[in-house]
Length: 180
Image (cartoon, rainbow, N blue to C red; front, side, top):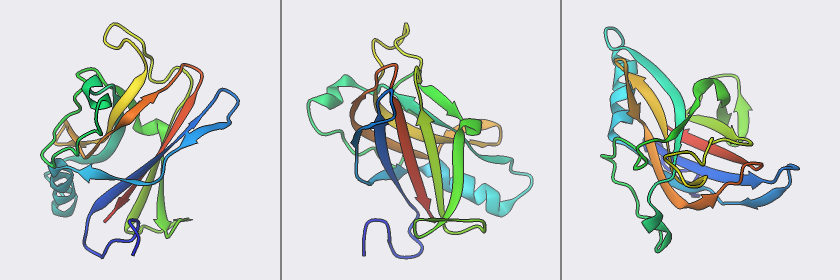
């Protein structure tokens, strides 16, 4: 059994990144890695199952942050499932309208709902729009999918990863799998 194929009933997430230069050439790509499903994801799912009056909007965006530069000295820690926000107090949010969603069967797209959802975000040139007053560079170290539950944004999953120095001309393609 591979990391992509855990037994039924185990809610888990995976992600991989590909960085491309200004001409679209692959600079580097990372293998699939696990991400942490946090507690509010389960509350959001419970809201969907319960239905009215709980207001759920599902995934509303992907937040990316600079995290902590102390994570560069040693491998980044695994975040606890109780995490509720990114470390970066001013993360950039990629809105839902800029994300691509597909159901998957194995690695192929499916028109019908399945137990695997793929979310793809392309952070193109000048995204995030850093440096800015809160960020000295466009180095990324964390991300999380954000949902909305009863009108409040909640973190659904969270990843702390090795630093990605994204220059203003490059594109980072982040692919996330959520397996239910």
